[in-house]
Image (cartoon, rainbow, N blue to C red; front, side, top):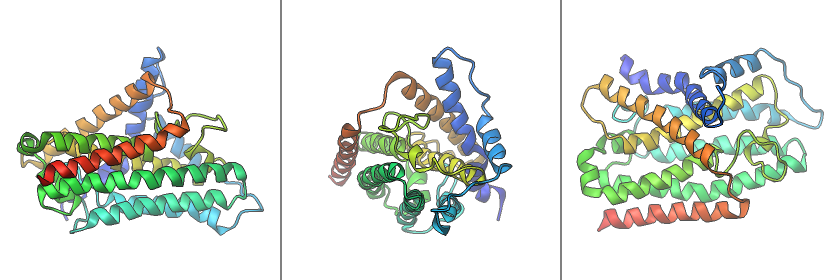
Length: 303
């Protein structure tokens, strides 16, 4: 096993918190502040790992297992995600279905851990999470299906490696629709503005954050790291699609991918600084719209 085989997996493990740092630093610049260091997410995770955890007597083993199992599912999904043209650590026909199921397992463990606290407040956030996830998954799968039809591959590594400038010239409108759908899925699944705000503490608007309020110490560190990995993985799909650098040189292709991820962090920070959260009743319409975009992309590719 050479270094380039491990690069997508190890790169995600190491660089995922840095992507969060870029987003946070960009938002600070727009607010006229210097902002936290780019490496602040790493220090936050290390600090939490050094602390102890407090558990309520009303919780069971489910609450303690949630963060660990969720992080394990996220790490498993990361093994299936390529870095653009650089193939993933694990790749096989149909791995995109396993990828979606592992993300679903992560969500399931987070939700049942929140419900295990017996708090109606966390139950409210869990219900919202499940609703929006049920609307986001069709957009993700249909968007990937559109690219599968175009590239004649059913593996994440295969479909992203086959997307080139020639592909964009032939099916530019369809791929643009898929990119828009994946962008909406990204901000939804990663709990970013305009769907959710990871920094909010307003009770009536919290979605993801409300589910993890009772976690602390290493458990919260696992959740924060898992969230960073999830943002990295979904961003990898988007960047791999819109940055079709396929030179055949792994170092050059990997460098272009990392640059694209940095630009994605800048874009996310800009979006979060220039608009407010959507009202909760409008989020389902946004996700249904993403599914419609993915369906239209399938129609265009199938012509």
